[in-house]
Amino acid sequence: MTKMTWDLSEAPESKAHVQIAERYGLFIDGEFRKPQSGMYFDTTNPANGTKLSEVAEAGQADVDAAFEAADKAFAGWSALSGAERGKYIYRIARMMQEKSRELAVLESLDGGKPIRESRDIDVPLAAAHFFYYAGWADKLEYAFPNRTPRPLGVAAQIIPWNFPLLMAAWKIAPALACGNTVVIKPAETTPLTALKLAEIIREAGLPNGVVNIITGAGATGAMMTNHEVPNKLAFTGSTQVGKLIYKAALKGNKKVTLELGGKAANIIFDDAPIDAAVEGIINGIYFNQGHVCCAGSRLFVQETVYDEVIAKLKKRMDNLIVGDPMDKNTDIGAINSQGQLNTIEKYLEIGKEEGAEMYQPDCDIPSEGNWCRPTLFLNVAQSNRIAQEEIFGPVLAVQTFRTIDEVIDKANNTPYGLSAGVWTDKGSKIFQLTKALKAGVVWANTYNKFDPTSPFGGYKESGFGREGGMHGLEAYLTF
Ligand code: NAP
Ligand code: MG
Figure 1 (cartoon, helix red, strand yellow):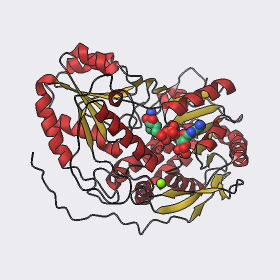
Figure 2 (figure 1 turned 180 degrees about the vertical axis):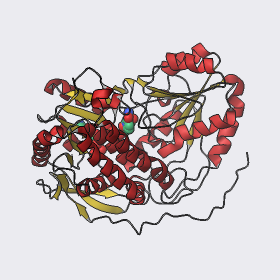
Figure 3 (figure 1 turned 30 degrees about the horizontal axis):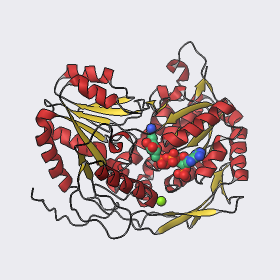
Figure 4 (figure 1 turned 60 degrees about the vertical axis):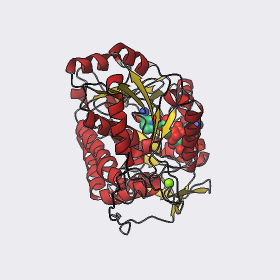
C-alpha cells in the first residue's frame, strides 16, 4: 500500500506562559514545605530527556506530617455544611478552567501526551469532575435517602502517571464533597500538574490540611499505605502494587478502592459501520500512546470483514503522526519513561517470538526521547502473552472470530475485566454482549468516552469499587 504523506506545517503550542519552579516542596497543611528527608528527585520531559524541575521526595517524617495535617483538618472540614464545602470545590473547578492552558502544557511537557489530548480531554474532564462533585456536596442525603451518609475521615490516595491531573481529580473531588480530608501522591514521573493543583487549592483558600499533596516514588506510596492514620486507601495503578495495597488495607482495617490494569476486547462485527469502527480501534489503542488502563488492546474482528478492517486499519495507521507532544498535529506523543519504553519493546520481541506477524508504519520519529511507532500484531493466539498481559503501550493484538458465543468466550478469557467495546449495527447484539462481557464499562459503537456522571471501575484483577457518578460517592462514605 502506498503511504500518504502529510506535509503539515509545525503547529507548536507556546510554553512561554508556563512557570515551572526550579524546585518544589511538599504541599502540607496549606503551604509548600521543604522535605524533612532533605531529598529531591528530577522530573524530566520524556520527549527530549531534559530536566524540567526537581521535586521533594517525602520520607517517613514528611508522610507523618501530611497525615497529621489531614487528621487535624478533618473535624473542621467535615463539620462544614455541604453547601459550604461545595463552594470551595466549585472554586477549584473554575480556577482549573482559568488555568487550563497552563495545566495542559505542563501535562504534556511532564508526561509526553499530545497537547491536543491534554488540552481537549485531560484538563476539561478534570475540571468537570470537580464541578460534578461540587454539585453533590449538599445533596448527599438525596443521593442516599433514608440513610445517614457520613465521611470516612482521612483518605490516602495514590495515582499513576498516565492521566496525572485527571486521576487526581477523580480521587480528590469526591473525597472532599463527602467531607473527607486527603493525602495524595502523584507518580514519580509526572508530579507537575498535581503541584500546580496544589497552588490552585491554596489560592482557592481551601482550609489548611484538607488536601495535602506529597511527592515521592513507590517507597513513599508504601509509607502512605502502611500508615495508621488513613481510614481509606484509594489506589489507581498496576494490579501488582494493587495487591500490596489490598493486603495493607485488610491489615489496617481500612476501606479500599482499587482501579487496576486491563486488557480490553474491542469487538467488530461484520454489520458494523467499518470506517467508524476503524476510528474507534485507533482511538481505543493509540490514544495517550496506549498508556490507558481501559485501552482496547485486544481486537476481535469477525472473519467475514477481516481483510477489509485490517487494510483500512493499516492505512489509517500510516497516517498517524508520531512526535513532539507540544505540536498540535501530533497523534502519538512520547512514551512516558525509559522504563515503560523498555517494557513495551520487550513485548514487541515476545510477540515476534510467539510467531505473531508485526506491522508498524515506517513513520519518522524524533532522534531523541522515548518513542514507539503504532504497532499491530496479526495472527495472535489466545494463549500468547501479548494477548493476555497488559502492555500499556501502542500495541494492538488482533484475533478473529466467527460467532457471538465464540467472541464472548475469547473476550472473557483474561484475568482482567475493566472495559470492552462492541461495534455492530444491531441493538440486540449490543445488549447480548454488554450483559455477557465481564467488564466494568462496555462501549457500543464508540470507545474511550468518559464523563463524570458515569461510574468507572473493574471486575476480577482490574480491581473493585467505582469512581465517577453517584457510585463514586459511596467509596468515600460510611452509613
Ligand atoms: P504502579 O507502578 O502500580 O504505580 C501506581 C502508583 O503507585 C504510583 O504513584 C507509584 O509510585 C505507586 N507505587 C509504586 N509502588 C508502590 C508501593 N509498593 N506501595 C504504594 N504505592 C506504590 O502503576 P503505574 O505503572 O504507575 O501505572 C500503570 C498501571 O496503572 C497500569 O497497570 C494501568 O492499567 C493502571 N491504571 C489503572 C486505571 C484504572 O482506573 N483502572 C487508570 C490508570 C492506570 P511511582 O510511580 O512514584 O513509583
Ligand atoms: Mg516527567
